[in-house]
Length: 191
Image (cartoon, rainbow, N blue to C red; front, side, top):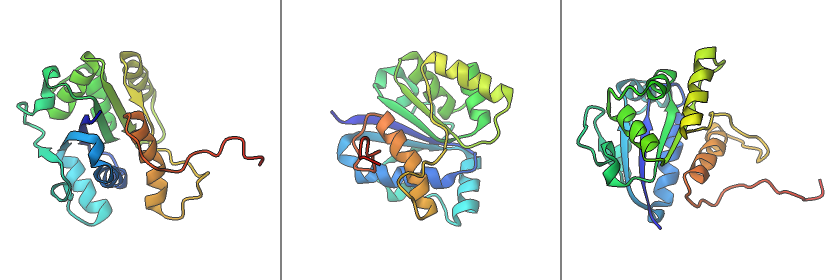
């Protein structure tokens, strides 16, 4: 069954994760019925700074929505979206979601996911965590969200920054219930 997704890119460092996510989602677009993308103002600025380019959302087969567009379909539970991926997720965004503050489309869509008991996957790229960050993560986990920190794995022996970022994004895509051909832990391989 094809999925309806929301991708939010917020103003945390880690634009490489969002770029990797969009590229991988495009590669499995046959599994996606629709995908809406929302970027915060800070996310656009950080993307330009970190990746030395403008966000290429329009290069992908997804619809981009302004953060002030409360008429976006995923601003309502009746639209039946399956999952929301916030990559990267700033601690400010996480705090507003944890507090139930729906002051823009990102936080409203996240609120919808929680109330509808749909998958809300938050990918924070912050270190270290303060007690407030940890409490917000606990509160969101208790509400049904999945916290998936942008902590790359290295057992696949990534050789580039993009490959390291992909280890996180592959996990996010798995969590969203999509199928992706990616490196898997070999299990009992005799090593």
